[in-house]
Length: 98
Image 1 (cartoon, rainbow, N blue to C red):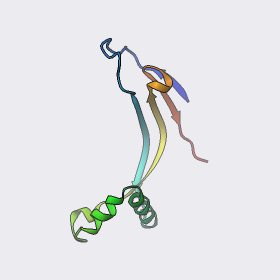
Image 2 (cartoon, rainbow, N blue to C red):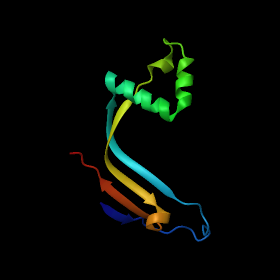
Image 3 (cartoon, helix red, strand yellow):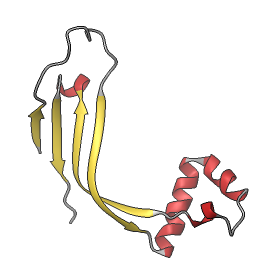
Image 4 (cartoon, rainbow, N blue to C red):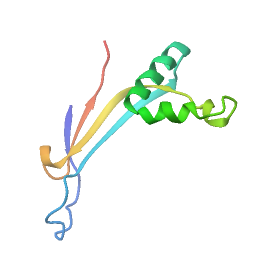
């Protein structure tokens, strides 16, 4: 893990600003296999109940029914959370799997 400070300063007029937080992930992805797709769709439906209701209204031959789920495997993470780490400080971490 490494900590970086962003070059430059924020304008003085931004004395009171909302919390600034950002997360970036760097990853590779591939289309989920059939067995993984079923699990991904189940999890997604639980997280976003409106997805199941929307999907139930679709024509099976229509374009949206062709949407795919992808497996996402992050390799690196970059976080900016000024309230936690200070102004313009990024925290980066490489992700390894065992």
